[in-house]
Amino acid sequence: MRPLTDATPKPLLKVHGKPLIEWHLEALARDGVREVVVNGAWLEQQLVDTLGDGSRFGLSIAYSLEGRDHGGALETAGGIAKALPLLCDATGTRGDDAFWVVSGDIYMPGFRFDAAVARRFAESDRLLAHLWLVDNPPYHPTGDFGLDAQGLALSGEAAAHGERWTYANIALCRAGLLASVASGSRAALGPLLHAAMLDRRISAEVWRGAWENVGTPAQLDALNAAT
Image 1 (cartoon, one colour):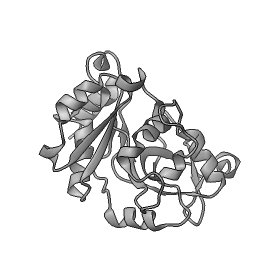
Image 2: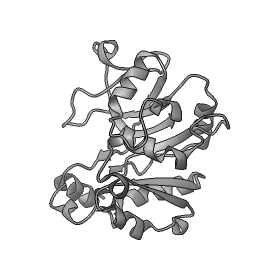
Image 3: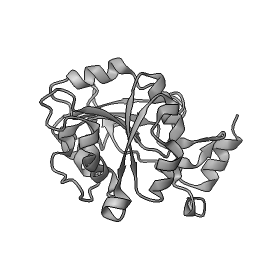
């Protein structure tokens, strides 16, 4: 996204006059979520200065600042692991070890952070994550994951011969998914998802609404030009 991100973190780039991350914050508040943790690394202080304590959205926002504390981004799994003490009871002993995860640079304006879906996931005995998938965009034609008849996500050989979709970068997760990631370490999320899929502990569903992973200035321009 350079040169746009030379001076602005990607989640603060605007679509239809509103920073990408604010579309998510407004949707979370609309759907009853009240506590949010924002991960930051690149130009992270701008996120704090722009979003504040979250009260103008009807939220309480806490910040997990990877740049300040570790000198840079910890990747997705590392960032979630660092934020776990703010997100939930990571031990699971109080039953509140489930949480939403959404990338700050995707545009998904019609998505509902459905409390009933979140409650069913939190009450499940086995699942470590529930993912939303989308049709494969032109820049990722082979997709990421498949789905079986029971709604469980498939990866690797299990997904090689069926239809595949692209991970939309939005999910419900449980703290146990990050059990192998030490706080403050760099770690990617993909290997954890693949391992849990092999153990049949990841479910998924396909999202048919508007979605865009804003990865280039041209994509951003196209979104802003669309009515």
